[in-house]
Length: 250
Image 1 (tube, rainbow, N blue to C red):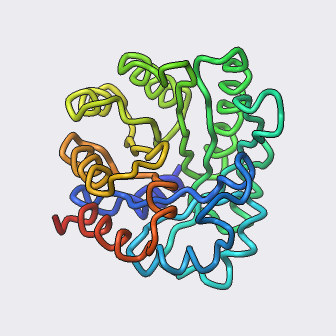
Image 2: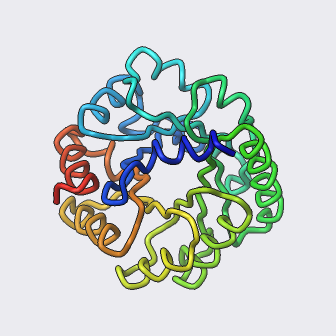
């Protein structure tokens, strides 16, 4: 019990400071896409820019160890599928909370794709991971996505976020519901901290930054954004702008 409380306080040390987290787990599902061909140099730039938490797969920890700063939090993502398979939206557990602790993790990450036939199995896996994390005092982040044709209505996204929290997730990451008002409503109906995901890369950087500002105003606990950050060159200046925005500077 106390371990989870301590770790959550490290992730959210101040109510005015939002969490700047970056998922770097894409290579399993999508391959070595643009921006994550090599993790170590990217991780160095992200940390220099102010990122608080980096989320990787358990095998990728080997690339981070030489460059991971003592103050940077580590998340281990244990849900997997690939775009090579016929059921890419069906995520399965490929790791445990015990393995994550052994790797030095501050957080376990699990993904649930709502609205697909395999949703019940993923909810079962979320429940298994929640029980493992509770026993070890490790916070659990659920990446809660709605995989319908329209990406989910605001009602659908609220439902998915609440379902993830009520199944035991300590933090929920979800998609932007289309407006600041709807995101605020989602945050109010989700009883744990909510992080916004970036989704597909937006060409307009200022539009992306405006989205982040809006989520902060609406009550979001931070961001968990990958491609909209690491697929822009250079990464460091944008990371610094995001850190200023999330850590109370703007």
